[in-house]
Length: 61
View (cartoon, helix red, strand yellow):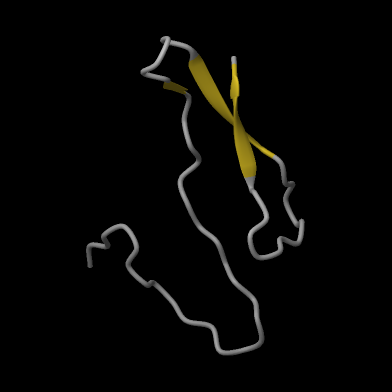
């Protein structure tokens, strides 16, 4: 079975646990000024994350 972006792959019916799975962002060039940005996570394995909390930030190389 092929999945598309955003397809549901599972459901959890026990409490408020959420499993977040996504592709790690790669470095990219910003079109304005040709500066290069890199994504850096602000969380570590096992951290608890609250609604609206940033997982990381883009910063200049």
